[in-house]
Image (cartoon, rainbow, N blue to C red; front, side):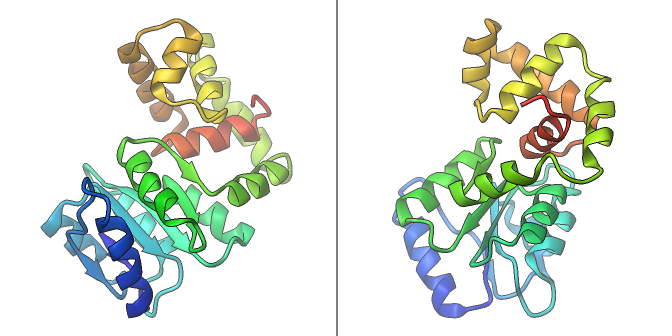
Length: 209
């Protein structure tokens, strides 16, 4: 599902995405006000939303959608890479944060990544995030949360924070893929995280990755 207030931009993004035979844009809108209803009606796997829209912007859309039962993954698309947008989007549960200058092939690839339940950030966004993780009061809270994890869960959380997929984590830690998924579910429950990106943020804030 595609949310973008500029018709030309929205049309261009749709053309890029649907040039991939495995992607179908099932719904689109120029505002986020009806996002929850559209998700209920069309059941998309991924919602790609602009940050700035007339009535309800991408940050609020992300928060509304990620609290739904069986919520689709949300990726935020914007021309801005300001820290407050990045942090707000990811804290609200976004699985990806992409800039509008992302090359077409990478944009389609990012949709596949978040559809698999993994995180996708533009390299420029990742650099800004890692440069600021050690600042602020989040570190103490993150460390407290990480202290609730078992040793094995901490290893999985660190692997997620290092950008490893579930398969890569399984190979790295010499465990089965199903065991990684079980650990990840337990980690998310303990940390009250809605997705892998939030797990990664908490692990970074705690100084573990």
